[in-house]
Length: 264
Image (tube, rainbow, N blue to C red; front, side, top):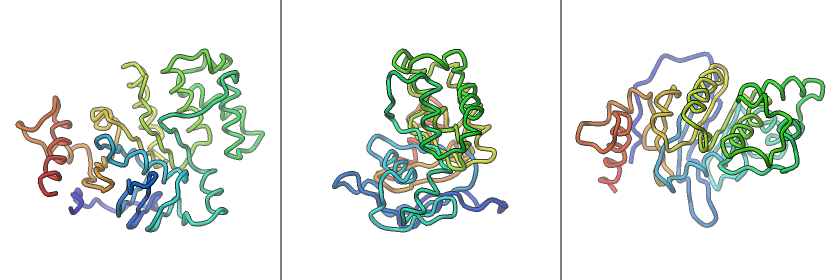
């Protein structure tokens, strides 16, 4: 099925931060991403899709965790096809997976400092960068608490902090709002808008309303293929009063999935 795209907008001066052509990525033996074409500039891009659509596999491929099975992938102007390129790209990206590992006895500050070291950040700049990341996610009063003492929502915020500590040019967040309360989700939306001013941010989520509120661009993926790319308003316009959903955005989302399924 042909991807439904919004009308072309005026060109910007920013180069592509993500560019994929015919991308295929396996999750085990399953081809989770199947021939995906994608080009993204700076901004906040929400990635929607049902369970098993390929969202997490796409995020893992863009984070250079898994290697594409076929197709071309360029991140931050570098072809992802060699160890030297991978190392250079990884210094410039941030990634929060659905589940991330940490040493329980580390404090929040020690954990984020360790992640900054893994990203090969300059030693002299690290303390200020770590404190800024902690402050941005609202963990200032928990900076010296052990990771094992944090609630689920606080752990998620610590995960976001490690992802942004290096001010990444490409930021990948897989289900970042899991465990956050409504007030924290509102604060997180503000942070996304701030980050998207200069960086290319991808947020994978099931929460359509978060995407509409915080994202400049919406991607809908199903069965490993890109079905739609456009603005939140474009997504809303796809729905009708008889489509399933409690909001105009949810109705647009369900309408696109219904149209896709009726053609396969």
